[in-house]
Length: 191
Image 1 (tube, rainbow, N blue to C red):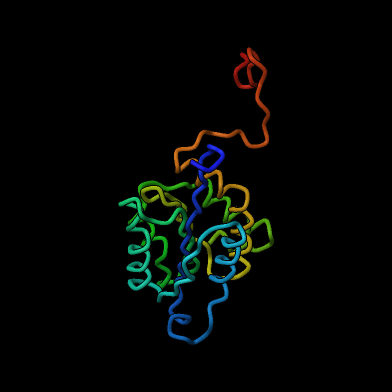
Image 2: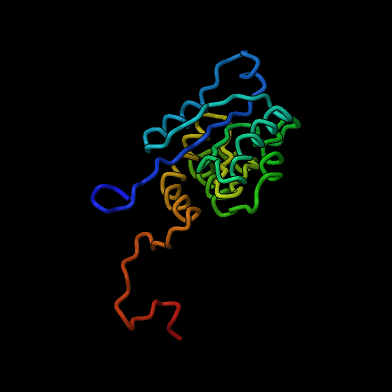
């Protein structure tokens, strides 16, 4: 409880994990991970990362370590990954993610792909990125490109905090809708 008797708001935690064999080897500097980390920090998150791991097993091990705390209650509120979501043989982020999720949130994953297409990138439909929940941690796979990350963050901007509130046991809020007067039925309730 705070000094005025209200609940103390805990700082939300986030981890940014990048799947890139070339960035992990030092061939080039990753630029997508810092975009995500800065976006989260601007939203008030305590951010760990970006952590860069090579595609495949090194990334899967890093993701399992990061998400593992979710099963014990010590995990981050959100883990956002970048890279490894395409269809090349080395793109294994969705498989590594699926192995850890308790359940998927397909509507959000589809919204991420749709945003890319709407922004004029038809190849966005080739992304196999997942969104789901492991314990009480939201896990989001974004593409490795900075454009794909920006598009993904634009989608997350409208839903991330609500999703985290729900995972923490918060009540449903009807975004963009006022409360109906007592006795009034919504349009689907008429019949």
